[in-house]
Every structure is written in C-alpha cells, then in structure tokens.
Image 1 (cartoon, one colour):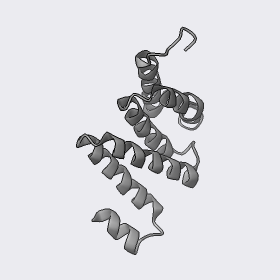
Image 2: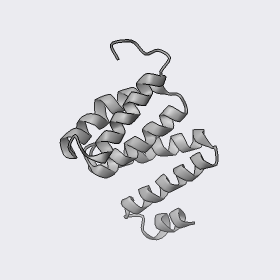
Image 3: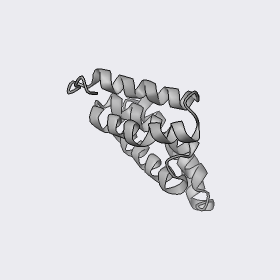
Length: 123
C-alpha cells in the first residue's frame, strides 16, 4: 500500500519509491521468496545507479544488499564481478577504506571468493 501511494501521488519522488521497493525486497527474502527478492533488488540497484551514480552511498548500500542476495542464490561470479569491478572501487574512493560499507563489501567479496566452487588461487 505504501509503495502504491508513492507511485500514485508522489511519482516524482524516486528516492521514497526506491526505499519502499528495497523494503519489499527484504520482506520477500525474509519470507523465503529469494527469486523475487533478487529481481527487485537488481532493479533497485540499477535505478539508484542511474539516479545517483555508483559512488553514491545509497547506491553502494543497494549494491551490497543485492550482493548478499546473489550470494544467497549462489551466483558467486556475478557477486564477485559486481563487488570487485564496481562497488569496492566506488566505496573506497567516495567513502574511504575505513568506512563500514567499504569493510562490509570486503567481507561480502571474501565470502563470495571463499564459497565459490570455481575459485582459483588467483582469486
């Protein structure tokens, strides 16, 4: 209902719509509907990236949430590529190496590397 109201009366307020969609995606994941959650988190991340760029804090948070869903669905390669090529460089540059989001991304990246069955020593 919340999302429907935002879309109907405040369709210009992209931030609140994306926040509501992110909350719905989290609820779907908590209900075990991980496929639907992953689709919605992918969309939210893409829209944040288009709206603010990859270096914005909300985009990075959305990307980290998307990465956790990728790990849960065992899409290790996509998670590794997303974190290594987009999120970690952006977080390090815009937030700094000691920021909690940068550290969380490093943890997500390490988890994806460790759990990936196709990992190599070079990873």
